[in-house]
Length: 583
Image 1: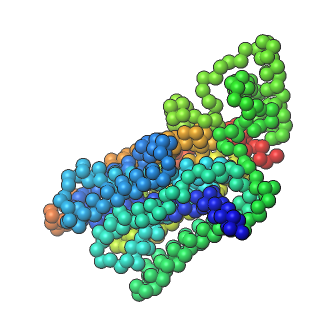
Image 2: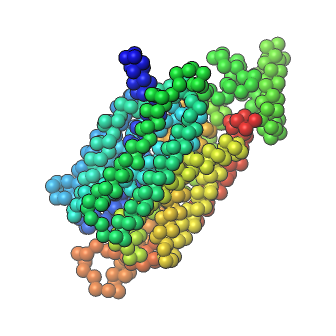
């Protein structure tokens, strides 16, 4: 009996669902950058910054969140727990120092030094993201869309969760939110970091996996709905501290629900080996097609490349079974001809779409740059809204800026969950390219920017809804798309390069366009009124972000066009990857 208990404990510790749940909890505090809209007014007033200076801090934050080369490299060299530890230390040092400066406990530093501190603090997120995503896609190689969507979704929801904790603390000192941003990730990550690792998840397939994913999706929707309801109640009703504390306890209870999945699969699942299946690793997908060799010899690999080059285009349009049969026949003929010396097989110059690319190989591919620039225009415009949400809401007459920060975090979360789920339906049910979902998200964002531009009644609520959903969807769909087109062998490096599109877009939209237009309009308004030079410049009215929002709306339309070009270029890839699952 003792041995059985020991085996169950070992099964629980090595359960891929336990790793996934631990990754969800870590990601729930990995979205600290989304709280910049709440802490930026405190920094602005404490250090007497203008909007352009504050935007530079925002760009530094975005760079920290996106420059993940070191995180990607360390995740390939060190155990994932070590990468998580490095991220925790960076976050604590960076934001902890900012808190000391804002509260007067440390001397004020020049703007460039503050940018470095914000960069270092937010760069910790890249370690959390890389470690959890790498373990997730390796443990769930055939469920990349849902896994990436859920993990990135919790990162987007982190702002709303931490805002609720901050509300419970009930501190009159607004700078205490910066302290919480500095400390909270370490409190969560350090106890969980040893659980984040590959555990051979492709050998742990169970018939109950679909039910497990359904439970997690239900928890996600419940969590988002609960946070939204709590936020609205707290905003419109003056509640006692006891009730707010009770709300927060229920929030943590909902977050704990997914742990019952690894407990159930480890302790109550059948021990019959027939109930456990094994799925092929993503990097080996192509070797599983009919007629393809799995031997390490380079001859068959070259034949596969030759088949891709020689097969008629109409083959990709055939039904799955007929297509694989035709490819197998063509491959067999080529192998026989090559063995007799009748044909000379060309040596490959690099991998084809859907195979494993290095970053250097991906950088010379048009598909990779289409993803990058589409992400720069679409996601970059969304990040600009997130970074400037405090000033945008104040310009339209709202004082409670944290409400909209929480709202956009929730919609961001649902966008990531929904983006992963619906894009998976597109590729699984129709074998259609996943980037079409990115184009839809960018069209939604374009409409959201229009609402912000005109400042119509309810524009802040509708705008945060549309921008949050569209922005969040990017970060569920793009990583999965990159892994499908360029493989998982160097996924960490590929993913972290693509994330550079975020700060690049923020630099253009926020650092150059939005801040300049805002300050110019604020100065114009100040000239027409009594203004103390010692006061902070503030802009009032929808005019503050009118032109900026229109520009970003137009760029979202361009991003959608780039995504549709990518769709046309990759139809055959998705037909090959997912067409077989429909037969």
